[in-house]
Length: 97
Image (cartoon, rainbow, N blue to C red; front, side):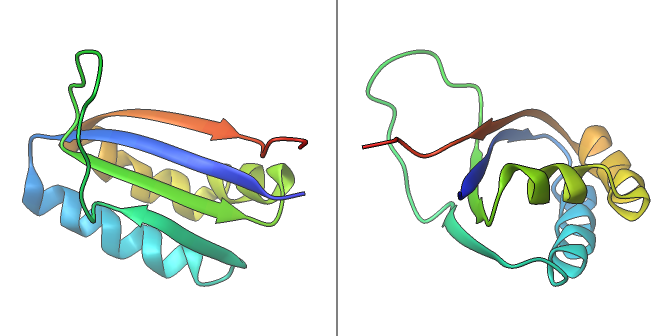
């Protein structure tokens, strides 16, 4: 069953964040996934959103997200993201309807 990695990101160092994106995209090439949202536009209808970048990526399964997130190579690249942005990372499963 598909699973979704959802990130809301408040980038405060765009140059370092670009380096993170380059590294993460390279690692993601080894996974069957589909980028559903990568900042093509959004609006806040309610709440106090402290993010300027959103990403939603569909993976084949929750296990694949865990495998990606726990890779040593991703942990190295993640250091760039943590230095460049404040991030909320969520994982969601699709509706059972």
